[in-house]
Length: 374
Image 1 (tube, rainbow, N blue to C red):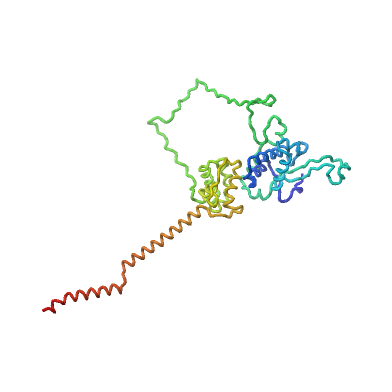
Image 2: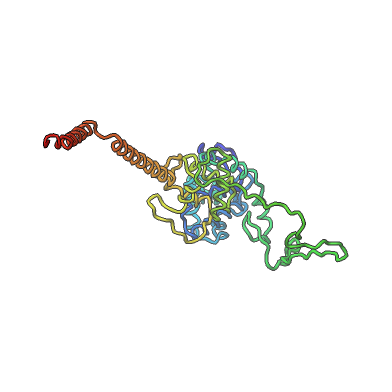
């Protein structure tokens, strides 16, 4: 299929893993309900299973609306709605519109047979160029280089009743499996004749033991990381502090939080932004997030936009401003106290001279009284 049929703003997706990742991490899908996700996932799986190597759906493999909707377990209306959602976001492009001789132009309402019969719609899996440009290079390289079983292989194996790339083992293997599958773990046998040293809970007294392990240094929660290495250390600290973030790698978390760190956020700021709105209202927790990257982007959207501009003041910035105001007030108070001490140490010279004159006058009057009496 020539790429000239695809708009310039779109690009044919290089791998199915990348296409699935873009759908699951799309911001418009972050706040959807569970039933919407269930139907969308079913439709997406069927599209993945019925594309050729050129990422185009193949009608000869059953990629028709009726068959795809039936295999996905959704109605035609729901199937059409999910296709529309994918097309509007640049994740699917229509190459051939489905038509019948009755409604096809030039067939005069079915009275003229053009020999094409009923044409099934054909779609190509795409992704917007802007999305690829905004992705982290390391994450993009990982998604484009990851190898998985191809949809063609899954379609040829009807015994594997799980959509690609999920793989499970059935509890009871059916009779037509190509190999014998068992869920019973094998037992490792140990020869009793071998000389096996006993294992103790701790070393015996008198043996020279090693010193306790030094705790690993973690990134401070109140310091803003400046480069990629520091951001990676900060993301490791976040994964240690927030258990839900351990579902993604530190490198992936760094790509999601790069704009926040560049805007001056600290580890404590990120934890606060993920739990509290800018107006102080806490987020409500009802269930574990289904797709963690989309959940993180959704929680950070009220704080920072796509360009990396802060929409609200960070908690660390508010604390720093309060500290500066407190230090300024303390300095002003110290200056006032120092001025008061200087005034007490050096009284007014004119007032001091008047007091001394009055004291001399009193002393002179007391000393001259006996002479006058004589």
